[in-house]
Image (cartoon, rainbow over all chains, first blue to last red; front, side, top):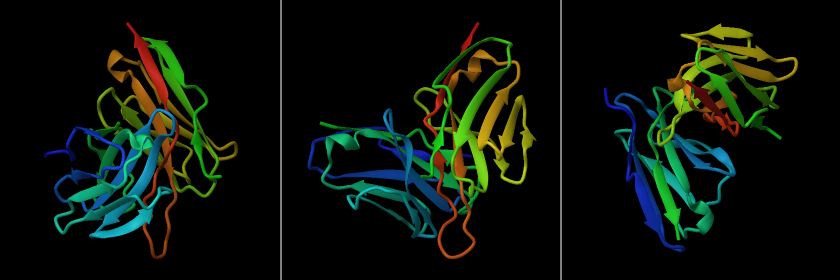
Length: 113
Length: 117
């Protein structure tokens, strides 16, 4: 079956703009988590969605938000982009919230200039 | 604070040798630990996990050891192959029994494993 699909793969934005990233989980998976990966901070948890509800949130400012649709697809949005938001944004899907085995997409590489 | 860290940022081994990747964690309340492998240009790939009530778990060519006394986790790869070259991350998760989500992985910084032919 198809894996986790993230779009777009690459994105270049200007400071102050906003961006929306998309994630389609594996069919049947209901939990979607988002992570930010940078060379300096590594992989950091952003938030998790399950059944269209945000169930958990990491230590990121309110500029970072997300949502999940009834088909489990998820989007994350970053407003008022800063240079430091440049990162690889990864989405992971799991069958249920709390499943140990999470499947990651290839990520969206966001560059803020 | 809660954190997961790695002892060595890089590890170089010869093909066919066994590899050992180490990880230290500080959150004694974590319920399970997971190892991920990330190849260049790809997202992390689940390798193996272990619950906090276990001290050893084996998979195909991999073994994870958990020492709760010293809060140490290791991943052993037998007969390392060139295809094992990647960055390896340990991660921990703490389950919650009431209300909110029990899914929040805290990752270590990663160890780059290079396998020399």
